[in-house]
Length: 289
Image 1 (cartoon, helix red, strand yellow):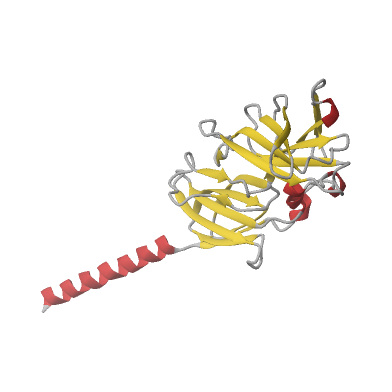
Image 2 (cartoon, rainbow, N blue to C red; image 1 turned 180 degrees about the vertical axis):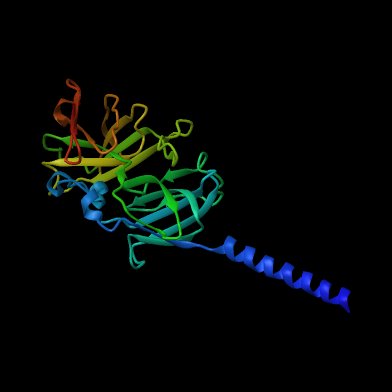
């Protein structure tokens, strides 16, 4: 009987220790990250941005991605919000006590975060043609029994390349295409640097109408800020036959800025575009062509 009692006591003690251990391991605390003040991080003049391809940056974000990595850099969690989620711009989670790295990515359109997430050091996101304006922030947090509450402003990852035609576009031209080489769609979320291994082309086109024939501009949002952008302009007729084409000078894209390439269609053969850097965001830079 004594042996049985000792055996029963040991079993109860084992289960008691196990339950206690599990309670400690599973204890989590609230983490709330807020990016609600969206208008405060979307500078820009609407009058200066009339082209359709970039007009979306004046609207609030459409997608927010929230990624968490532990103190060793191991992936813990990915959450995604879309505009219809309430409260949009406030991400709530539960994490155990410890040090974490949190990465926030907000965009006007979809970005590709991927599904095979492993560590902070190697995780990359992909900027798609439809991603639009992209904002980013990486922070370290220390989760205690008091939880964490942070309110963040994000940094703009994109720059904008804009082409402006300074004279009237002739009536035989019905469409203008801006094709850009050397866009680098991937960037590392740990360093915020683009991946120079993969490069691709981006294309945006605009129909020429009575309302924009006398004052025409066209633009693209890009994340490559490390190697020169090569831009080509093509002017097409109603049957998509090429009327005239122009290769612009090499352009350096700068995050938070737009580069304005400006020139006259009538002077394509004799003059170059002027490229400059100015900002309705931070700076605008003008480039003659």
